[in-house]
Image 1 (tube, rainbow, N blue to C red):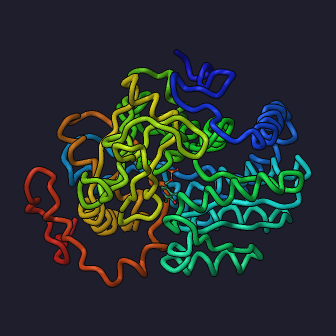
Image 2: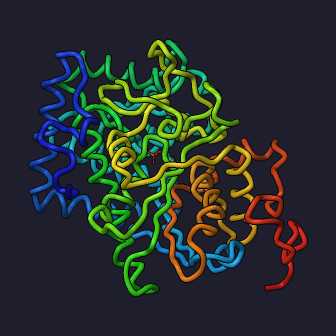
Length: 419
Ligand SMILES: *Cc1c(COP(=O)(O)O)cnc(C)c1O
């Protein structure tokens, strides 16, 4: 199977994906699909989007050879794809700009979005402010409290934040509410979905908007290596930054993909967000995909130190990659992610988002597997600024106690030897 055959015409990646929605949503989803197909072929749309990605979002983002981190693990050469340097602090702006441009093309004056931690809400509010559309963001009340800074950011840009009080009062219910709103206001409203999950065409469309990450990487790595990297690593919440990096390499069969999920406090029900590691297939938010569910098919609560990975489903394309063995999915616990956060901050002067720190946390294990003379690209999906308030009150695990094959005697936290 080639990437161009994924998804098929009905929106399936093998058995996964599809469009499991109430009948009233079929027509709006078809309208979006048709508009996206036309936009992809339209030179003026593509030119406008790539102009915004360059001048507004700051693309191409650099590919950085992390010399110190590579030395730390003693294995492969590690490169960081710097999505943390995007405007608004993460890869989410790539997708938000694409979809809000599409909304404008469709003549919809109002854009709605769901958000968990607030990052997709902020990206959508930003794109709407720029392009002059009205923006309303659904957010669980519990998340509104935990992420009050992002609520303020959205409001500053003229967006309305609608607190969701139903169900778990977090992301899962924010998505349900946004879909309900869309059904009733579809004539005037575009639904800007934040990841590669949800009903067709979202998993495919969001992949296409995020694939700029992988396409840039294919060219940029040639400045350092003879050809492709040996492995790609990215954290997986809904899975959009990971698919954005992986998909352009899909047909390059020698490149191994590793998705890192949120292991939270360990893989007991309700304590993590590791959907592909511990879930079973089922239907949520309009797609057939792996889900965290109990024996009755009820969706389980999730936990992660990083709000952006706190999602009980995953994009259907990842479910397909898992079953076919194209990608391997692993998890990093809260503790491992925090140690990776400390380490990257300390040795490279880059404070990653807690989500991205999960990808970094898998590197010691991967380094052992790969050995020397190999290369790895890690998607650094976002920066840690948004997490600083949360981290300030925490006792962080010292980086040198992190298991990369025993403590590294060359450095002890806080007493860094001259390099
Ligand atoms: C939202 C977010 C994620 C998780 O979303 P994906 O769709 O899995 O990429 C990861 N990293 C950052 C920085 C985020 O803001």
